[in-house]
Amino acid sequence: MNVRLDIAYDGSSFFGWQRQKEHPSVQATVEEALSRVLEKEIKVSGSGRTDAGAHALCYTTNFHCDSLPFPVEALPRIIRSYLPPSVVPLKATLVEEHFHARLSASAREYVYVIWKGRVFFPFLRAYVHWVPEGYDVKRLREVCSLFVGRHDFRLFCYGYGREEREMNFYRRISYFRFVERGNWLVFFIKGDGFLRGMIRTLVGVSLRVGCGDLSCAEVREALVGKKDLPHPLKKAVPATGLYFKRAYY
Image (cartoon, rainbow, N blue to C red; front, side, top):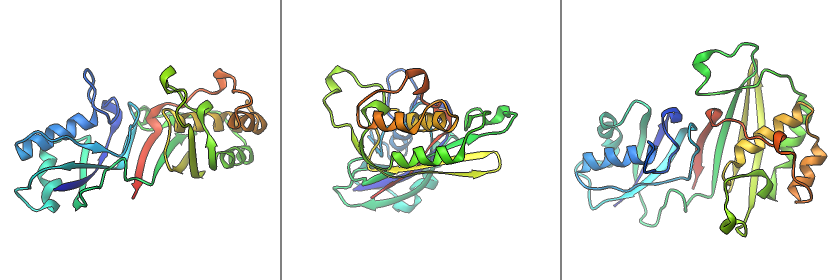
């Protein structure tokens, strides 16, 4: 049996989705809960990596097992008591044998949430990014449009070693837009895949353009590999405001 399990999680107490030896991860937490419920070791595949401190609104996983001692629809209710409050199972379904949460995904969508208020409330610290300075909406909209389409994003990511420098850094962005509501600024980005730190870097660069520290011309040059952006201005925004919204299949 191949079981798809969709979950939501508060990532503030985890070092990302992927299992790690020395730090708590969402993957290890879900695997431990499933193994206890099914009384056998369960390994789970996820939709992709998420950064330490990032969150998920609907994160898809899947796992294989010989059988379930209950209807698959009951799995979220049964497993809930074995999970911490920061991880909530949403829905479970049987899927085709070849389905894989990461490899079968055609696109992924993320949300990045920013608070623009003069005062930053302490209870928001783990869930949004604070940007107290102003920005030009027209410039912000223009730079977001530059990232749409298929581009080489090697200058807009980080964390790759020498052995990975020859990998394919091309990704296709379907949309990169934002919505303002009072003091809230929310970015929406959908693409066929993302590199390490890519979303947070794109948001950070966009904010620098919106504030006037960078120009759209400089961003265009970086996108075609002509000239990298100044590193102090290419700083990725914190993971606290990043949410995995959903994967598309």
